[in-house]
Length: 590
Image (cartoon, rainbow, N blue to C red; front, side, top):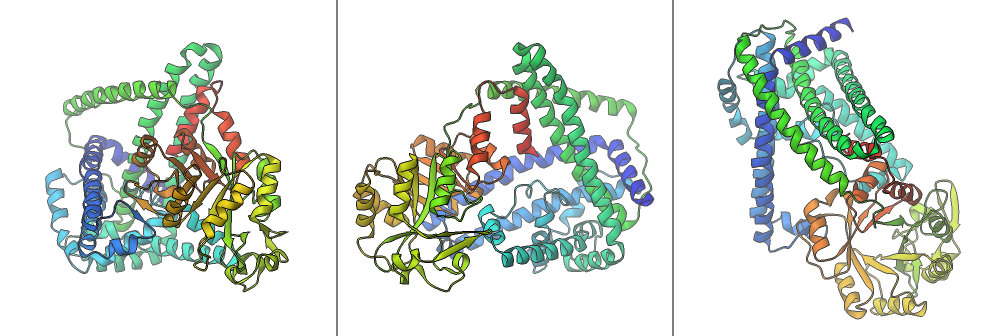
């Protein structure tokens, strides 16, 4: 533990002594990312869409999209570009740390040349090992490997929720995640070894990392834990201290609260960027120190007058950035959406304390304040509509029956179980009747299993017309063709298409799109607002994601927790303190 603390202390000294070098490097990395990586990715996507003739990529067409030879080539080139960016980003930091810890003078251009000499490995079969290495580190990327390109990479929430919905899924997820973390930590030294040693391949670097971590794994884990704990402690400490003046001003001099909030938010945004950069620098210092056992600090040779000149320039640039951010934040806070129009949609009813897609779930969802209640329907063997999500009874009833092969009356005799609760399967008409009694509208999702009758859409329309809900209910499905037919059949019915994946602009002629949260982008939100077309985002179950999409004032959020979503929406009122608004925005950064 003493040695770990010494490595941390010496790493901080190195970063302080060479802080101007780090400022220049991080500035160049961010500039290159925004001026090259992001535009190239956007241009490549548009070109691939034009080549294939698709307007956008969905779960229905992605297989044929990626099968196109030119698309395959462009995807390979993009992967290579991302790998090179990661290699140069972290490789430069590793080389800087290596020279600093040995007291060796260095210049940026020779370091760049040293990295260039090994680019040849990216054009060989060796790149497969690097791809595997990065893939293994993805579960750790947001913390242990702080790269600018991996901060937003995560499994789509709907996939993890499906896996975590069963005991077997939770066990499999835990085992796979644990193995990935262990292998990732054992392999984490691959990149510093590869970038620093001039004549070593990617594969040999991976082998050396594995051998080293076998004897030094405990020390590595301790150092990383100390780094993360210290980083979070500093972030929280600075946040609390910075927000205290705003807390006082809002209560003593409310007229100055808006300006104070804008200044405070700008300051914290800059601090978080600096701390994230510091985390990257600390990571590189620690990796090099434990890999090459070089805790001896080098001496800084830059003359004091040169340092002062650069500090003055850095101070001026920081003041300009702070001023611009402050003005932008003041305008943004002043125009923030309070009491947004976002609809709260209960996902399959209210599953907390109930079984999904049941009458009791609808009642609980209405009592929780949901604006809409989403239910799933399928057509049974006798042409009726049953409210049920899965194609089989295995998950909820523990039986092997297939919904499409059973009649409605047979299904209604069964008891279904979920999370310790039990209930009966309901028909669509039963759900409409209870929803009308509760004065709440339904979002009906039509599940297509391939054995539907030809008149399924007219039959659905007739059911909705019978209960006089055509003007108030919503109907959606992942079958876009059927939804387009339904829209032509009943133009005033609000019809939408469900997507688990979407890349590119939408061109469907429907009333709304229901899209998985991972694929919602700012350009898409603006595009749908201009058309206009509603956007429902699914499935949002944590406070942070709920808050993010409410801030964007999207049309609707589909959630398993309508009560929490309603409370969050209610908090966005004009009487809310600016401190709370700033905290909400800072949570996005955390």
